[in-house]
Length: 223
Length: 223
DNA sequence: ATTTTTTTTTAGATTTGTCTAAATTTAAAT
DNA sequence: ATTTAAATTTAGACAAATCTAAAAAAAAAT
Image (cartoon, rainbow over all chains, first blue to last red; front, top):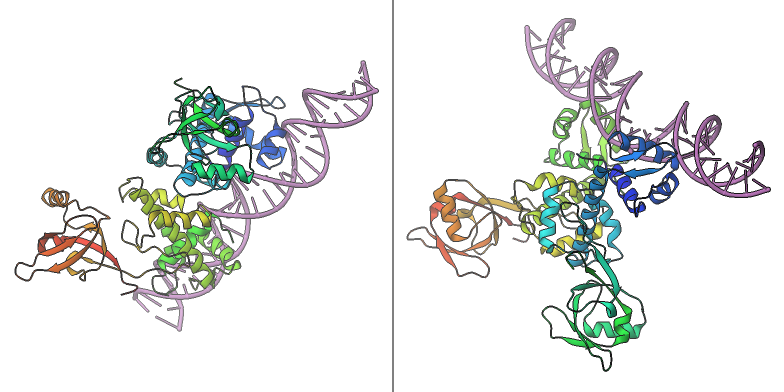
């Protein structure tokens, strides 16, 4: 079961477009893949012949169970490589997507399983998107303001809504950045401040204002 | 300047075959690349048009300076990835070649330079072959029995000539394996034993017999 | 219920990398 | 110096993935 990079890209694009379980239309796919509708039609016929998707001319397309499985493996590889690039090689989270688009097509299964282990089996990539496990199961991830994070839940910072220098200055002071893993120990009712815990550091408190501007992702699978 | 994986493979194969500076013939290339002589001829014409090699029909082929530069970058990537796979992901040195054949075609320059840094700028891959630097300069590497390693030269174990359980047992006792970096502090004339130093460990001595069965690689560039 | 517009598919080409079979050149052998 | 053998190239074909232009189907608009 090995597919060309091009086929893998089609499967991935269809997976992303068919959000719920609706059918995906040819034009949308062409737009997503930077290609022409005619090329899409050609490829859909090939993928259908391989039973990776359901396709009737003019009626749109939908992945089969097999197709979904392949798509999830590509997404798994993409997100693990992104994590590697940010966490181990120090790339910024904006620059990793393009490189991961290439790395996701490396085929060795053993490689990706070992990479996952090496990275410590992260639940989300640097953007906070969930990483499917080796069976293709995707953890359910909540993304909320830090303010709304349940107590004692470990979450990763995925974005900062306010980019003012004052804000960035404050984050620097707390040594908080994209990817930082933290949890909320408790809320102080009096002034609405939060006590924050980060592994291997003393706990500290932050203001409600700061917490409302920090967005985090956390695993809700085993909630 | 981006080339297809196929073209990169041709350049790499020619580089390896043209050991000294001799011309490479079509059949040898076809054998190396698992392809047919006719296909090689076709490709040589394309590579010549890109000034990556000198080629006259029936007279063999030789890389130009440009072609060599490209080949060295591929080799650099291949060997750095091999090092990564063994040193970071715990692969055995026999299983990494195939995976590195894929990884070597990932194009990002920044990726490979950061990977090198992350790995601590190793001089050789797990097989003891030298890794070209980002300019394409290849360190000169000596491979000898540990017995013949100059004093105080840091070298990496690359192979073990005797695979008996007794031998492997002894290596295990000394915590020596493929890739272990060590140096010889001194030789004791009386019984020909060697004093060995490994970073972060107490020095110890080994027998002449053991040293004659351990092969090592070391950088001779700045000798 | 037509007509118009949009979407999608077909038909025919193109590029890249490969192949087989036949022709040609070079090298080896008598 | 021919003949034979080996190596190399040409000619023509093919699969994968793409494209343009034209045809067909579905959806939207009147």
